Image (cartoon, rainbow, N blue to C red; front, top):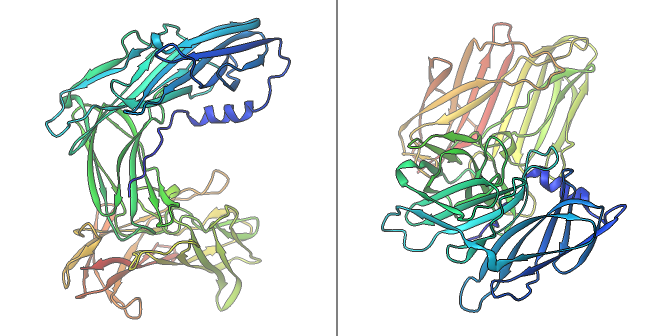
Length: 523
């Protein structure tokens, strides 16, 4: 199954402007009609984006239709697409700066378009022409960080741009050659050049490797991609190149022009729903450098949120409890969890929550006195409407935090979250039967907001256990402290899956116990 993404042409700020501009122009004292002509001179129906200079107010109108506008300067942009019965047709992107006063007309003529030409010293396995996505942008209007643009995509030889030297415009393109590996070039210019395109050499590109492992995600189909992420937003911002859309596990390599790139991953269920994935940290690399972006490595675990004491309550945000550490908090899966706060043998509050379909799930339990409290969390992945893959890993996590709280003092609880990283697993996140797996263990905690005291807490002791029977029995692992992390040696069973449990304590007696069930498999 192959799903082709449409190329992203407009940044986030631009989308907001488009939405806000919505209805008819207010206090219109002029009118604009934009006619679009194809490469044979006939009128072609197109959608035209009209941007006011310098406010950035944006309008959308069909070509040949009159739109009322306040008098002033505008940029009219479009992609003129002409279909063909025996090929991909033609795309011509173009823009014109126009002064609207009274009834004004302007024509964007594809016959003036110049072919967008790119070249690469391609290897022998690249046999077809590159696919090129291109757009023109109003790049210097308002104070928005992103350009407003219109664009299209086609194979080289069928994509054109109408030159325009105005400094109010930007032109950006992304070209992709496909063979055993992919090769991608991205470029932005001020104005639309008379000879759009460029020449590139493989030796000057950056190598990006994608390693997608199987077994941990809620579905098997993984659609990986890269988006251009220049430090200063321009007409290439968010332009996207697909890396591979396939069932995990797989690996893929793409070579791109130097700069800053945003890796991404989308996970699709059998019913076609986009059910997961996310955006890892951007990568800025120079020519000749390389990096590997992993998705789906074992084990998935809680990502960020810690208990807090505020407003005479113990509070907890039950979000990002099962997530891919290589993606981050925003890539965590939805869960259903039971959260309970106890003090000694007294249950203060117990509640079942889910973050599926809502962002308002929160646990809060009022406390009346200072003392030692236990907050426990039992979370399962939860996504109605889909069937999870058989044998899915990291299906359940539990947390048991033991800490001292005072209702008169607001703070982030002095507890930890554990990150388990089993090493030496295969692409299905499996260890060899009856082998020994080294598990890198780190104890982390993050600030929960500027209004809560966040004190430094040092882990005094870290212990690790493993279970081969789903948590019925546990075996202690040998743990060695190495720098800021610990390494646990886990003896694997002959089959099945391994659960991992950690206990982190500090000098004050605060304790954090975390368990990941089915952390990795045996195969």
